[in-house]
Length: 373
Image 1 (cartoon, helix red, strand yellow):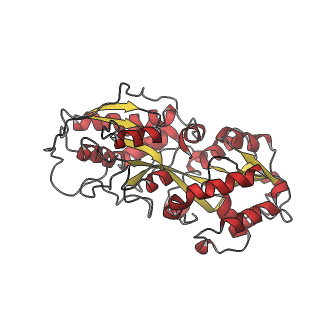
Image 2: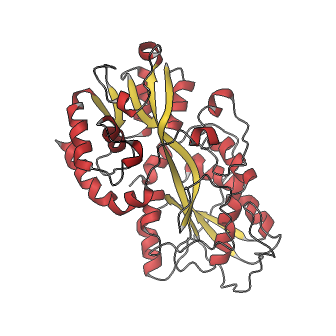
Image 3: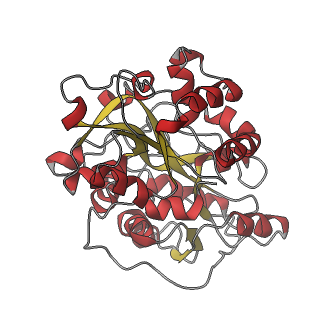
């Protein structure tokens, strides 16, 4: 699974003045069946003042500057506005989520999780979103699920060496794997225990599959294409390693997370992004089945999605905002790596997360076997 290490290692230090996280044991709230969130349709980023006085919730995420940013931007302000007491816990652990739901003793009310895993657990470990409470109208098209909303966004992007290919930069993933036209080493993710959108889609596009005809993925065909260029591939299994490959110039091109790409360029790497066909990625927020106060938990999710909250989260963490009205103040370089603007989204390769969530476990086995050859 992408999970804990990928989230922490994929972060960039875009801010240092962060508020300290709330701490304490995982908590639950009373039933509070009479919670009154106010009249009218839900509006992201809003909660009725004092609506959750006496309610206790627990927000679980991955820790580090990412969770610090979440708490400073959304969780603490939500507590102040709503009157709820919001505890913090983590890091996110899928076995703990399952154990809580199975035991009917749910202590995590809102959980930040990998999007594919959240999709796979919809209706099992996570409950459907309450559309009367959660306003998804400001999310980029197609990013919400039945049981989850994006917590932030970033991308898997093609980075190329400007010194080598500046006069004729690669245009897409087909060029990325064209070792005759663009000689040199290229880096791709190589997590033996994980498979996610990226390398397989790139391989199929390089093998002639139209981007809008990728799904269902022909995994064997993709692996055959990757095998044909394997001598030119370098595998990274941490975000830090992918960034190092760019900064050291060990590769000519790389498929990396946009946050790591930004950090590398900020540190002086002579690389530039090709955003055509970049793959959008996000974490997701979801409410476990059996949460003691689902209305209050949904209210926290809805507040988190607000434009001002997302603006601050981006400024604190460098992750892209998932509210289309968010206007973070970033330096010129950082603003180039925001993945959720309309112009950037128009360049995105459309990923079928529902297909991935259903097939990921089988793909992991094939992928790990291929890596071990």
